[in-house]
Length: 102
Image (cartoon, rainbow, N blue to C red; front, side, top):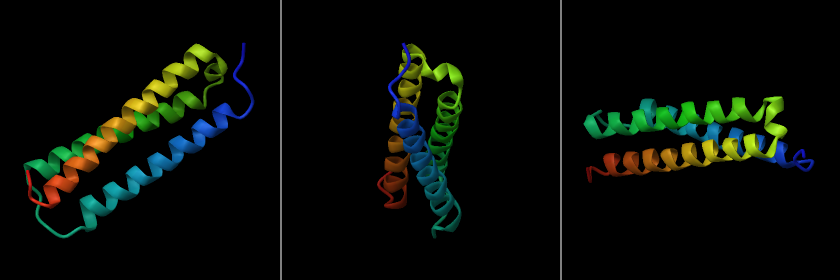
């Protein structure tokens, strides 16, 4: 049984929007924002980098023909959820780091 029409397109759109945000946020926060780097800011950048790698893997999985299979699609959604949670952790760390809480 294949997925209903439109499911994959919606997920691909969501992945690209989150991936675009991740890349732009990391670019601004890592390269253009004022302030010095320390251990917490480096940790935040590493966490966001891991999230970006997860998002790219998720996008690659969602573009495969096999993703029409519901079991594979669910696994792709788990990848997306995991990479989004890691992204939120990275953004939270960057906020705490830039406000010098950590």
